[in-house]
Image 1: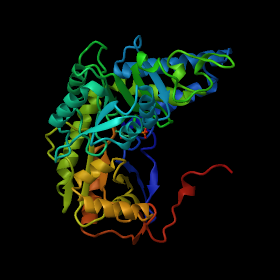
Image 2: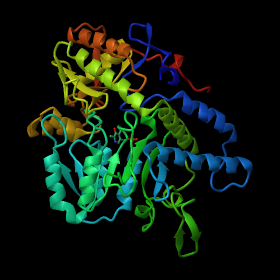
Image 3: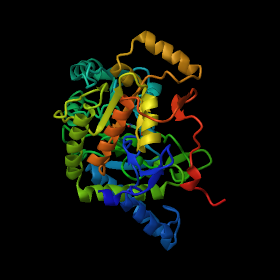
Image 4: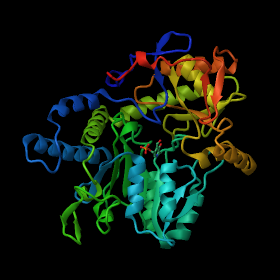
Length: 459
Ligand SMILES: Cc1ncc(COP(=O)(O)O)c(C=O)c1O
């Protein structure tokens, strides 16, 4: 896979003026582009033209390729396109918001989600529904007994269960098919936010009449080696037919009179305006490359590397791993959150970046309630942090550092991380770091980033 990822050979600068190849352990946020998607775009772009409206050859070709991209995405998650639709949008957040707009809503309508969700699979539900949260266990896993209780209690008013496929903080993989069976027995539908799962594991929506069928799936192109602004919502056509779309405008209609609108069929009705054709093609190309390589091989490689990383992290003095730290418990993807005792997460992440050439993420990872609970923060601590935060000072923001693997990550990447972590644990780093209060991030004082040597516009 390394040959298929763009930019792995590029040197990036360190604080001491030297350069190193970059180690990206932040794939959980966004992954680098796959060469297959870059090549597909390069080949296609000379023919790019308007879709679904032009009559010329380039428009006809663009329309055909755009529609084929949907077929490939459906194949990636094994969706039946006779009954389901693939809706392209901007990202996973937009896709979830679209679904929140599409379902019957009201004060009595319940959506069950969990305490481990990314904000994108929590906040959109709060606006439209009564949200019920399934609890988590002390180790950060889903409390399935609590889930069962809440499902039984709310089943009469339940519109949807919305659950992540893999948690973006701890990497836990949810038993999505087992939960789907329970949700269907309760007479409801299930959404799997697969933004974090799809780059790591095969996804199978299963046939519509299978009790373990997944009703809705959400994907994010930028986490699947196609960072060109595409997200996807896949689900049954009937869910999108009986209401007006969240955005209306060009492309969404069949007929408009001076006082009436007749909506177009699917997916056009749900894709207002000119679509991101390039993003859809790039995503389809990377999905194809992953399917050809096989997700089984992606999984096998990642399992070995996650075990290796968990074992090696334990060598670092003061290491605290959150969630599961047993390398043999495999209900997780290669996402590992940690801290070093006595070192602020944001300072640690800064030293890794400026002095190690290693990209990670630190903070709360858009999952504040989950991180607060994994850190076992008291209500008082959370309150005082919240007040400081709202007053514009993020320097004491609680959090963790997260390393997240990609299909191209190597043991050498992990080794470089461990060397740097050991140095930081021993206080052996060079920069004098200062916090930027408004962001909570640390940066070495007096250092000017040599960005212009790496990329600049031709102005
Ligand atoms: C589990 C999960 N869901 C949703 C999102 C939101 O994705 P996007 O940035 O594409 O909206 C993320 C992003 O980190 C995520 O990890």
